[in-house]
Length: 109
Image (cartoon, rainbow, N blue to C red; front, side):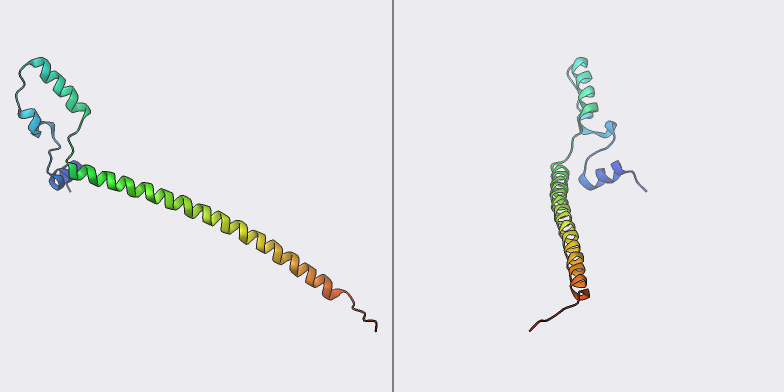
């Protein structure tokens, strides 16, 4: 199985090895500039626009999913609190009904 870098290189058409990069094949006018290019290449990565847009779209999808999860948690918490309230209310109503049915009823006409 090929590595992640190899698969991305094949999919998006860029090189994962430093020695195969097109920017390294261009000769520099002075040795000082080549040192600057090397340090810049270590800190930066050339990414195709299509791959970058895909990453940004995925990031946007993750953000939207996070918002939806937060909304769902809020609705679940509200529903749980309401269910607990209704359980207590039902319990109290049953107790009142049992108490009322146990009392003897006298009707005076």
